[in-house]
Image (tube, rainbow, N blue to C red; front, side, top):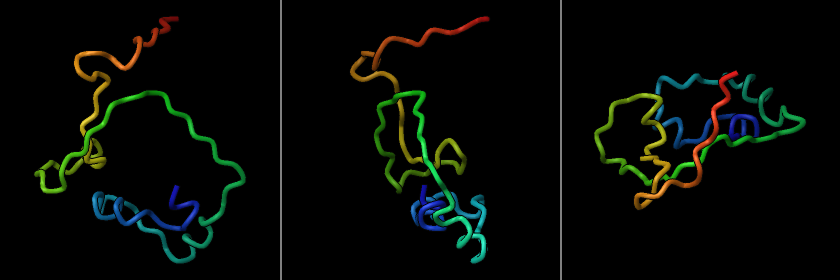
Amino acid sequence: MDPITRGDYPFSMRSLVGIRLPKFTAKQSVMLKGSFDFVGLNYYTTNYATAIPLSANLPISYDTDSRANVSGVFNGKPIGPRRTVNTD
């Protein structure tokens, strides 16, 4: 949300993703900030998450940018029932 509300990515994202993250020009940043009329967020999955320390030596990739271990199971129990799969 930061690019459309503040005109740039948050520092935490820039520091983790580094050169893989596109940079906005000053003009693009001004055009982007506040450029929305409506914002809606959809969540399609739920996971438990635990932080991975910044000191952990992880490969650099989209999958590790969140610095989190995620799981749909906690203490051997799933968060909820598995979703149904539409095979039509």
